[in-house]
Length: 352
Image 1 (cartoon, one colour):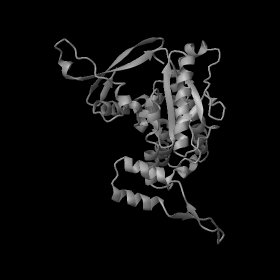
Image 2 (image 1 turned 60 degrees about the vertical axis):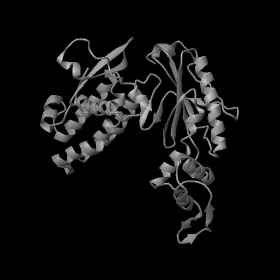
Image 3 (image 1 turned 90 degrees about the vertical axis):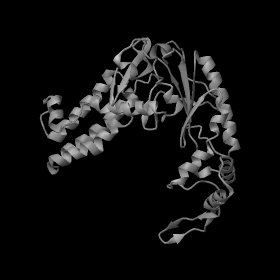
C-alpha cells in the first residue's frame, strides 16, 4: 500500500477442517517431518482404531469407526492439523501464506488489478489442487477475497472487486470487512470497523454494570474493568494503534467511561484526575508494550516477515555518545508522503 500497489487476499475456509484429516496422509507427513518409527507407531495408535456413538437419555447408537479427523479439544489436535497443512505454502510460490491452525490467508501485491487477479487466480487454482490431493474440503461460500489499497488508489477503480474463480465455475465473494483472528479488517486498513464493533460490544456491557452498580464495591468495580473490559481494548492494540486519531478517540472516550464507572464520579470529571485517582496509565501509555515487540525483533524471535519491517539503521558517521545505541528504521506512511521513522531503543523506552 505504501508503494502505491494493490494487495489482494484470499481467506480460506475449510469445511469441518479438523474432522476431515486423512489418517494415512497425516502419518505420511509425520514421517516426512522426521518423526522416527517408534513415535510414528504411537501416533498411528493414537488416531487409528477409534469409534464414536451418540448417547441421549440413556439410549445409545451403534458405534461407528472413525476413519478420519484429529481429536478436537486436545493439545495434539491443532498440532497435528498444523503439521498436516504445513506444506500448503509450497504450492503458493507467487504469494505469501499466513496460517494459524485453520485460519489461512493467501495474499500478494501488484501495481494494477489485472495483474493481481491473474496471480491470485493462478495461486488459488494450485491451492484447490492441493486441497483435493489432501482430501480436504473447501467451503467456497465462506472463502472470500478482499482488496486492500489506499483510498485514492481504490477510488480510481471502476469495479474495486477481485474476480477469482473456483473449479466449479463459481466466483469467490469479495467483502469490504472481515473478522480475521479477532480483528476486523477493512480495505484501507483504517480499522474503523474494528473500533466501531469493539465500542458497540463494550458499551452495552458497561450499561449492564451500571444497572447493578449498587451491588458492587469500588474494589470490585475496578477489578471488573481491568479483567473483563480492558482486555478487549488491549487485544492487538499494537496493530490498530496506527489508525486515525478520529477513530482512536472513540476508544479513549470509552476508556474514560470505564474510569467513571470504577470511581462512580460525575461524567464531567477530567480524565487526568480519574487516571490519577485510579493509578491507571492513559490509553496511549498502555500501548507501550510495543517495546517488547521491538525487543523480540532485535533478538530475532519474531517471524522473518516481521523482522524485515524493522531493519537496523545505518550507524551515524559522527562520533556521538549515542553512536553505540540501537537504532531501527521502519517504513511508514505519513498522510500522503512516504518516508521512514527512526526508532531509538534504550532500555524499555521507545522514542520516535
